[in-house]
Length: 444
Image (cartoon, rainbow, N blue to C red; front, side, top):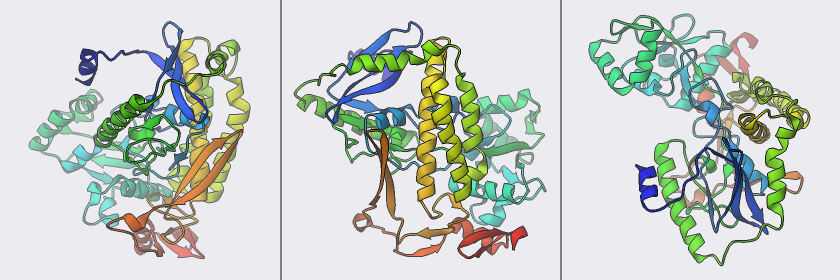
């Protein structure tokens, strides 16, 4: 419907195009460049205002759609010196989906009809961690408790829906027809009933070192706007509702900016440089394949005990691996054709995003909505802050900015307390807190 409306009012659309860089100079954005993925034609878009609506990433995890979430907006914005924020925290640290079945989101529907999570011992563990909400808890809680069960050796996590009746199944077929038919094709569902348990796991960790924007979704770089998950978590939460509302406001703001603009800024020869950068990997057709680099990156950041169950030394080791990939592998990326060329650029943005996420996560010395073993307390004295980063020349500038809680109708107290995500396992005897760190049951 949106596409048809745009066509009806005369909006020119260009499809199958990979936008590789923003055009910027003198502190403002004047458009973007990219290449067509079929013809290889190089496109230059000159504009009086530009909106990023590029999404976040799960580091190309195994789940449907996640290979398309490649953090390109973060990379483009970072390289022109835009201020980014929030790489270490997101409103949901990951999603939870079937581990070995090619189906996407839908957990809330299965749980809503009465499915439960069981660990490798067959225990319904969520009723221990969250007696009231159980499997209907929020994603930060579910992901945290999945990780704790895994750390205690009680993985895999399995969804049990074998007890669901005909009415439940009828509703599931109405709400999730494709996943239900997928389950039928592999024998999980037969004769209208779940016959087997389904292994679940966290997705790859999501991150959003997005563009810092104001209430009109204008960035701190002139003429650049952002919407949806291209924004930092300080401005936009995950989901279609936030994407739609932020997109509407960003679009209106960008239109006003274009109307009031004096014209399009020249590029001072920048287009030629960006064209050379865009097609550079084609000159190294015998170089490393992008998937080789992707696997290295995934091995560094996707294990659950790196970014979902955090600890400083583990994150430092992961960061060193990412920096090695950045310095040794990215310069060797080669492209056989335009498909591989796009993958090379995606890898450049994913490696940068992983670097920013790990550096920010190491700095945040507390547990908030993501577990951190060496800092189990929520610190509202020192860490009601956003972690910011901006490229200045060849270096990264990092700093923090206070969250303006004095303007909040409901403001958190300025206190330090054991994080809720650690209080529950402590009260269950799974962990203890000694010398400011988490000690697991076997380590007491």
